[in-house]
Image (tube, rainbow, N blue to C red; front, top):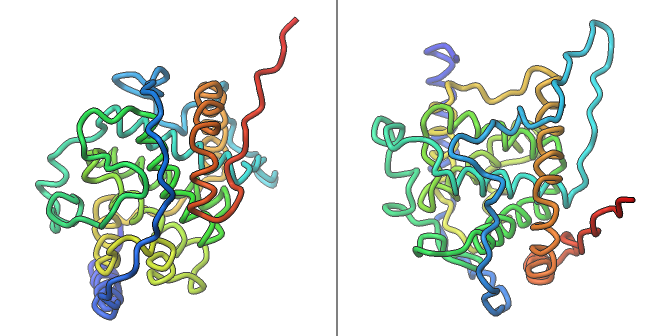
Length: 288
């Protein structure tokens, strides 16, 4: 937890950043139109009380011994984006968190697009009732893919983003169609600033998402940091390793659905980000 003086200094810095941001309209990116695919849920792997993604490793991850380097298995760019996308979908489908966190927050309205909309959706407006889970995943992955390509993120940053989102949920923040994008974007902005230090700013995040209105991004970052008690860092190497192992397990659990997803949405997402990020997923290995 930051000290009173330190927190006031951070508050002032974030507010100064926010007040200096340009509140100009940006021409939205126009994604190509696609036909709505047949509805098929992508939620068989979820449960009423899902395990934290840091606990989804098939076996417990032992902490590194003193003087021993921690093993940090890397995720490919595609797996990092899809893995975090499915993790976010799980949180959304399970309606994680409680409304109490918003009601008691200093800046309640900033977390909900009901009162402060961020702008147009890339493919599907998730606030519309009855949207199948694969459409929600397409919207989530499209947003993450834009962040990934324009900010040149790696698996380290994606693990930090997921860790921040889980800390928000544990603090009681609900994940629903109104809070999903604000939470995701605020977590991404905090994570890239921590990872890249002065090389990355809130304006870089704004430029990565030109179709959204993010003049208040600095306030969103501040609200997130206050919500999680300023615990924005992963201190233990074993915690990072556990998150990567958990994401690998999640990717394995949803491999069949992700093959279907890549076939349905890979081309349109690659067109949006102008990069061949999503490729056909390999078929399951043959068993004798």
